[in-house]
Length: 363
Image (cartoon, rainbow, N blue to C red):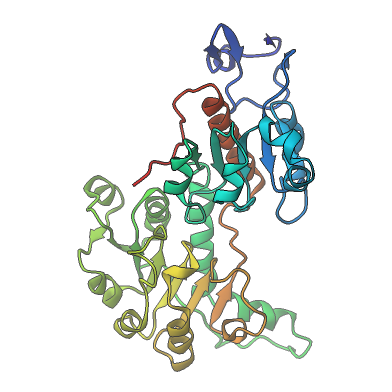
């Protein structure tokens, strides 16, 4: 393998790895910063498809093809005997392709499943690991964009933005009602359930809005709470009783499935808004519909539901006090590119039997 250094800054050069006597580019370098040539065949990476709603983003294809031979699920099914031996990694984008025992059994040289995003609830980590295959995700890549979306949903819900938009566009509007109002943000109380990387970034943003910040977490995060002036609530009910906005930022696991249900909605203020950027199953959706319909809570803003998308006749789609977005926490050009780079880094590390920087451990 030959690495041509023309145009690289000293900092870029410092990011290159020395690997088995060969020079290999660290994945975070910009595409086109250097050129690699190699006589050996590129390692095979299984993808769902190229382009389309569930496929590799077309903007990423050139970057990926310089490093891997991309093999689609359709190609694998049609030429399994020829292609299965070539696949050493799975590029799991948008939770596709489905990684099950049948697929793993037919890929004898598979080393890693690299999954886009922070959540890995769509993967059976123990089952995959039992085949000697590593799992990686991209938690650091999505932190800021997801926190930004969380605050967007909070602001949109608070200021009743969706209704305001319709008023401004409606052909029946001949004047604006001087007494039409939304809700405040400054000085209000935000309760964050889950003070991990994203929860902490949300708290930083809320602090800039001069909000009072409460948080509930499995473990107290004293350094983080001092940094943003947050108060720890050991009991979830204490947070729910005090919060004007309740933000869900937890991973989906057996302990968090339907974490928010009838009891929790009963405890919340009637003027409170629920914001969910974690996973749909963290909320009991039937209880949520009832809470919104009966005025137990004021509103909900949801980037995630179960299933996704909801059936087109689902009652949440017709409630004026429910705001829904299509699981778009990481949906920015920059974040998606960084996610792809982190996946590539993990794949290259696993292929060369190096520690995987963004590896997921088996609990």
